[in-house]
Length: 404
Image (cartoon, rainbow, N blue to C red; front, side, top):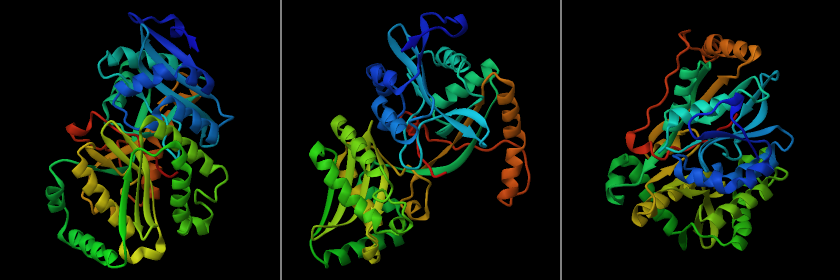
């Protein structure tokens, strides 16, 4: 771990920290995770060990850098980055994370001088060996990302952002009966109907567990991913069980989450046979539904939707969770739960190099029009609207993984 003020810069009692390997990240895990707990980031996959696991699984040979800002001995900002290529030509640093699993995020202590912390973070980023920072999976309306964007404006760093998709988030408040009344009549009737039909087929069990023991993790995951393998993903060879190395990765991740008490799994079963499952995370009052699957042989009973019906009922009754986050792009089936939505997108920053500035100019002025033409839309300006997160949601803003 290397500590230095970038270019001799010193801001009061702040100093920059530059980690250059996952080994150094693991060595600093206590400070990193302490910051994670204080930050408004909720996904536990942004903690040090799970970032390290992701890098080792998906980009073991890529350059890894993690930047942090400390006030005395207390970390107040951090950003993990892995090397990638933009357009196959331009070197960039991106957040760890992909469609298999979310990972890194910007961490920022909300009870600190965000301007000073993000200014120093950007100054340190200028020393990185890339042309751009290409940050996918960001939630630009979250306070931490807004702080970074303001720092770009203050320091003259060229940046751009655009929304990629919207994610649903169901608030768990007001009681189960009240929540049901917010749903459409047709959806309520459908859920009650398939529930009665399934009850007539045998013994129906719903299991929601946040406390799997380490030895229970692997058999639970294998049974769940066998269901995924029966779907179109198995036929396409893209399921977890048919992708080399992927099942051990999820077992390792789930065991770490279980050790932290941040694993959340749920299953719907008929006579002991699993019909649908959710593999997810539980942290800071939010339940994240990461991997979802159902047995296509029971499609007539809408097992995936019925699982969410029972999951939401249990979360309302328990009172420990205040939101269920669907994580991925909002689909028609998920929209039936009438969630609030937030936007997930990309934030791109030019590092202080000529090629980086040229690439950012092209991205800001040419790419929006190309994208509009590809989408069949009328050409317009470069500004792209960003979602608004309700004020009540802003204290725990998630990071979301997406395909592509």
